[in-house]
Image 1 (tube, rainbow, N blue to C red):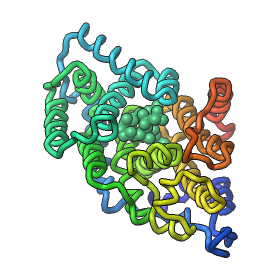
Image 2: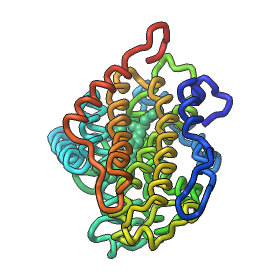
Image 3: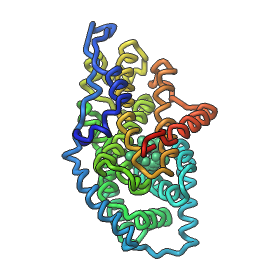
Image 4: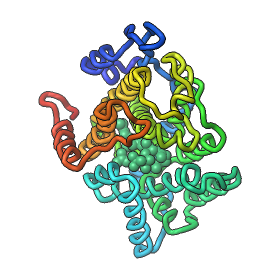
Length: 371
Ligand SMILES: CC(C)=CCC/C(C)=C/CC/C(C)=C/CC/C(C)=C/[C@@H]1[C@@H](COP(=O)(O)OP(=O)(O)O)[C@]1(C)CC/C=C(\C)CC/C=C(\C)CCC=C(C)C
């Protein structure tokens, strides 16, 4: 996030909200008074070289405007079938994102399905039932296939959809490669010393989805903030989603021996891996969860401020996806913080109400040039 882009970052409401969620002393049942975690800690994106993506993507966007992007010539019938299959994968594996995609323009929704299908296939490799057979060479092969996709030589029909998408939107390969890097991390790492380490993992697997999708959602022609601050908001969008995903799945992940929670923070709350594996919801656990949820909400706040700088037609789908996913945090609270034995779920009626709330949020604010 660019600190000097004050308009962008510090809307009054977000500052007030994050302050309310900020540092205060609280009592933790077995270990006495301990400080609340610093959920507002900023993790700089300098080492992630986001500026490289922004610069290259801006050049690519100019090429796209001149229609000078590399075009992948593919059989239209095959492409139609390819997108149909990606759509099926997205609707089966990711109902929330699928619902949001239905609110997008046709070309954008097809791109989201292709990106989702590609991402979820690697995720399944490292996270699914066959994860034990995963080897370094498998992910190396996946990376070669990615290069082929970008060279217009798809390996299978699902890759063909992504080949078409990257050429339609002139996408940059860096974030896709980084997503594979995140999946590599998953093959050798199952603990995170602190939030910095966890943040890096979240960036690789989910922040990258944000940088990949900004060109698809389109930056508003009238946006006056820097492209970099919009990309940073998109990264925060992905981070918030991944943190939510982690909090929802603590119990499931523990069954596979994985704990995607900062170890130092667990310790501060008098908790250890054994408590997670015991799957017992204690008062310490609830207090710990309150802070983890507050942190995820902090990142949603940062992400929200980027939406208005994207193309108008993307506002409703993005607000929908943000509010729907964020609601999982409310569902964890409603389960009295039992994410060890229960899976937080947002029901159909609630989802419909959220879509209508998102629609209102996507409407222009009178007197503002932005939504
Ligand atoms: C509609 C929409 C926002 C679509 C985004 C497309 C998408 C979700 C792609 C994910 C690709 C993928 C599967 C990557 C593999 C790594 C992974 C598993 C990431 C997790 C997604 C959750 O998927 P999952 O199938 O596990 O979900 P459920 O179990 O069904 O709940 C992640 C949590 C990453 C999600 C990342 C985002 C939503 C970031 C999207 C960012 C933008 C659209 C940019 C917005 C821009 C601004 C400026 C705010």
